[in-house]
Length: 184
Image 1 (cartoon, rainbow, N blue to C red):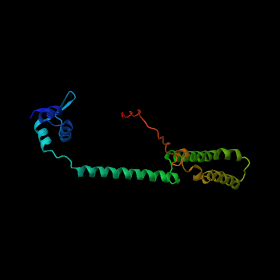
Image 2 (image 1 turned 90 degrees about the horizontal axis):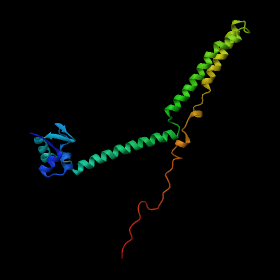
Image 3 (image 1 turned 180 degrees about the vertical axis):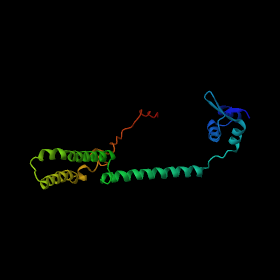
Image 4 (image 1 turned 90 degrees about the vertical axis):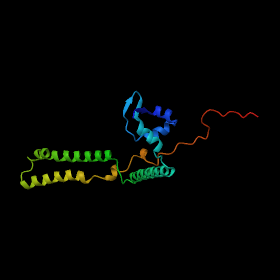
C-alpha cells in the first residue's frame, strides 16, 4: 500500500488519465508531492477496476435536472421583470430613498412646531388660540405624509425596461478568415 500518483496509475494500468481521475475522485488524498496528489495504491486500483461509471441514463437524468433548474430560474427572473414592468415590484434602493425623504420632511415639520409656536405665541393670548394654532401646525405636518403619491415614484426607469432593450442587429456577413478556394 504505497502512495501512487495519477500519472503512475495511468502508466501502470495503461488507462487514460481522464478515466483514472474520474474513477478515483472520491478517494482520500494521502499526501501531495509537488503538483501531484498521491493516493493509496490498493484503494486506487480497486476503484479503477471495480469503480462504477455513470450510465448514459444517469447522465441524461442529471442533465434533465439541470435543465429543469435552469428553466425554473429563468421563469422566476421573467416573472420578476414582468412584475417590475407593471409597477408591482420596486427597486429597494428607490423605496428606501423615497421613504427616507418622506420621513425626513415629516421630521423637519414636526421639529419646526416649537419654533413656530414661540414666534406666534405673543400674538395668541388665549389658550384656545394657542391650541388651534398648534393643531394647524400638526395638521400641516401630517398633510406632508398624506400628500405622498406612490405613482409619483413608481415604476422603473425606462432605460432599464425590457421594451427598450432590444437584440442587436444581425450582421449576415461571415466571421473569421476567408474560405480557401476550391481547386478544380
